[in-house]
Length: 249
Ligand SMILES: Nc1nc2c(ncn2[C@@H]2O[C@H](COP(=O)(O)OP(=O)(O)OP(=O)(O)O)[C@@H](O)[C@H]2O)c(=O)[nH]1
Image: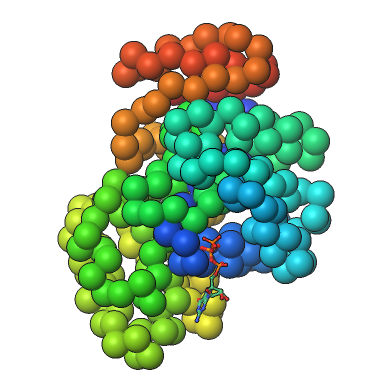
């Protein structure tokens, strides 16, 4: 019998990280691994284009109707953190159109090291760095690196070409993150892809059981939904809701 306290809606999984670290590719990989057994949808964020959505549609990993671009028209950080309304509505629409949806993946537009998702938008977040960005970037830190649910060190296959010690980069990630997981990933390394798939499946199981506690890597910011229903968060921030849906804070 399903757990009555478990959330009724899809798990929303955010993928953030600096420009070009491989967020779209990682989402394509997750879709390729899971689309055969789970119902998935994707929201992408770009400032002025729908390029990431077009990339994912072209990758052929999901029914193109299940991939929707949001053009933020401004810093993508704003749309995933400060006023998440446009993303929340896109996620809710996909969940309604393709019900039941198991996971909605939300890709942040490429941003700097401070881009993290508001927990009002996503339940779980992955922060993506890549080896080509240099071995020092983990040490530079930031809320996503330190506190996202998963830190991916991507493109591990490139380590020898850019003189980066991948094992050391991963070890430094573990140092700054305490118990939180760090995963080295390369699309050329099948075992890393299996580990990523397993992490997503474990998260979904934890989310459905009601055990998963969303973490805010940075401070919560105010935002609104479409119909004016007001919610107050445990930390005192307030926002308004547009749709009737299960909602946890
Ligand atoms: N060698 C290698 N290249 C990769 C890997 N994953 C992605 N790439 C390449 O990295 C580049 C950037 O990948 P994207 O997935 O577009 O990165 P992104 O973070 O979505 O980029 P923005 O949306 O522009 O921020 C592309 O040329 C990919 O082919 C990998 O595992 N290994």
